[in-house]
Image (cartoon, rainbow, N blue to C red; front, side, top):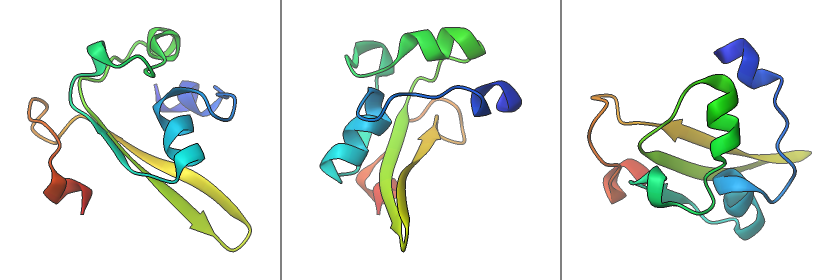
Length: 85
């Protein structure tokens, strides 16, 4: 669904990434189903429902954004403070 997700625009400040960008603070969510910020409609639209999320703010000379990782490489583990570092 990578091509489909590229076409989806999320308004600034919404979802987990929006929170991370607004607060300039990394965030680990190890149970997305219980996370109020999770944009379930986006997951439904692309047909991919992550279990865990790690998101960190990024900034560069003329912009900013968020890097979001979905699910640990083993597919089942939780993200840790070590992953965040």
